[in-house]
Amino acid sequence: MPSMTTSKVARWDQHGREHVVQVKKAGVQRQLTCGTCDWRKNAQFLPWLKAEEHLAEAHQATVDPTAQDS
Image (tube, rainbow, N blue to C red):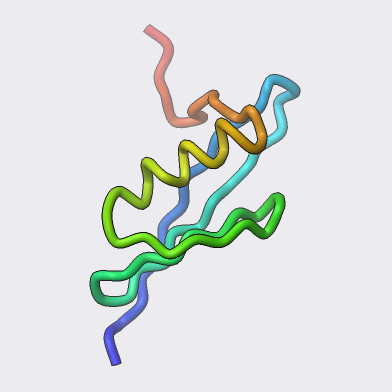
């Protein structure tokens, strides 16, 4: 059984609420799970991009909390 690792994609909406999609990796498959609406999707390619797209489309969450202001 392959080991499982987890990462996350977090974005804020225009009201300052944080929305997070967990990315669980097992082998070549990744399972995406939204903590806000319980949306789930399996993805083999570009899972973080798919997570960002979900956050933008479903929750209008587009502000990256890790981005640095210049």
